[in-house]
Image (cartoon, rainbow, N blue to C red; front, top):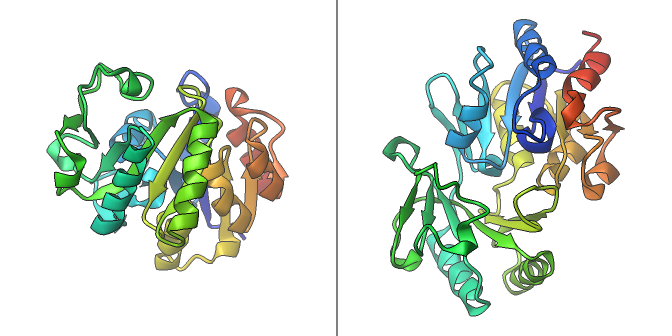
Length: 276
């Protein structure tokens, strides 16, 4: 019997226009009303995720920044928090600058009105596809290495081959120091590399939250579309890949949805599995 349903946002619960189809909203409300734990598991910042969930009038848990920060959406209470070790963060910044890369930092400053930190002027082209000019939830600093914020994730956006080369090099030089993945199923760039605390991934935080609720991995359904969802889809009792998912995710899934994110594939598949 399943007790918890973990759902990714982009490419999964959201359609390509970044809206939640009505069928998905109705399905989530029904799940919660019937006693299921519903967790939104996303790579997005908590503030950003919360904006997309305003149409759901039920209490949810949001597992944001790929599990590095987990909060109750009703009161913003922090349940789980994982940050990069300061020395590991400095190594990462120094290594990335050797390659001319421009990292974007995700930080835990939700209550202070910002969630990102950048080191250059906000209108610089290296940020143009990632930071919205209408959203001012970021801080500009002169030097990342002088920062004292809690770092949830370091993000690199750009050419897939360049990011893959950096990803492989970092993991070879500093094994087990970081959790990282490259996302391909995105709209605003060719690829996106996220580097985090070594225990910072969706599955480990989801499992930790579930254990607190007395829920075993076998009682979890996880559904997603991109490479940062692969571990939770592989390890959950029922792992579901969206029809529009990356090949890596489809290879570890138990089920591939018959409908994609623009066709409310989440609602369609969960209704079938849970006989709703």
